[in-house]
Amino acid sequence: MKITKLLSESAAGCAFVPTMGALHAGHQSLIAKARELSDEVVVSVFVNPLQFEDKSDLAKYPKTPEQDALLAQAAGATTLWTPDYETIYPTETKKLSAGELGSKFEGVHRLGHFDGVLTVVNRLFEMVKPRYAIFGEKDFQQLFLISKMAAELHPEIQIIAAPTVREPNGLAMSSRNVRLNAEARNAAEVISKVLFNAAKAESISQARLELAKVKNEIQFELDYAEIIDEDNFELATEETTKPRAVIAGWIDGVRLIDNMALQPALVRI
Ligand code: PAF
Image 1 (cartoon, rainbow, N blue to C red):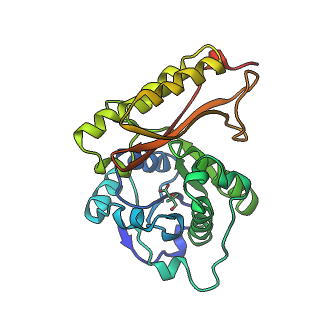
Image 2 (tube, protein in one colour):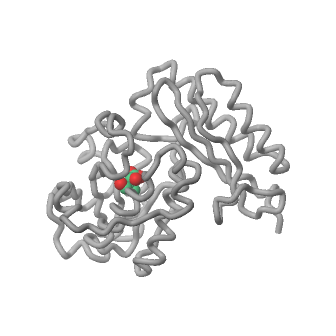
C-alpha cells in the first residue's frame, strides 16, 4: 500500500473510502467493500475542520496514524491519502450548503456540520475522481445528503451504502467509542437495544413507544429519537414504506448516533 500526501492521476476510476482517520473495524468493512468493487482502493484520512462546529470536539478527535495505515492495508486499501489542509482547501474553495435537511436532526445539534461535510466530500470527489465511493449507514443523514449532492454534481460516481458494524454489545462502531470508559460503554448498550426493539415493532406508533424508552436511561442525555421516512427524512406515518429509527445523544460527554431500518413486517406494499 502506498502512503502519500499527493494523489496521482492514476487514482481516477478507483473505489474510494473517505475517512477522518482513527480507523476501526467499521472502516475496514467499507474498505473491504471497496476492494470487492475495484483493484484500486483509495482511503483518505483528513480531519475536516469545517464540519466541527465545536472546536473542542475537533481538538479531541482521536488521531492514530500508524494504526490507520495497518488497518487500511489489512482491509485491502492500495493507497492511503493523507492530504494537508491547503491541498483540500486552496483559497476560493466552493462552499456547499446542505439546504433545509442540513438543519434537521443532526443539523439541529451540529449547526453547519453538513455544509462542512458536503464541502469536503465535493472537494475529495473532485480530486480523487472515483468510480465508487463507500459510506457507512451509521451516519444515515450524511449518507442521504452525500447521495443527493453526488447525484447533482458527480453523477458518474456511484455511492455505495455499507451496513453498520456493531461491537459485541450492539454499540455501533465509531471513532468516538474510544472515549467511553467501561461504565459508559455498558450504558451505551441502551441505544442499540431500543433500536432493535423498535425495529421489531408491529406499527410505527409502537416503534415510537419502544424508542421513547431510551428516556428512562439516566446516563443517556437524549438529543433526538424519531422514526423517519428514509426517502425524505420527514416523520414516518403508518403508511411510510421505508421507516427508519434515528437516535442521538450523549453518554459521559461523548456524542453517539445510531439508526436502524424497521422490519419488513411494518412495511406497507
Ligand atoms: O464520516 C466521516 O468520517 C466524515 O464525515 C467524512 C465523510 C470523511 C467527511 O469528512
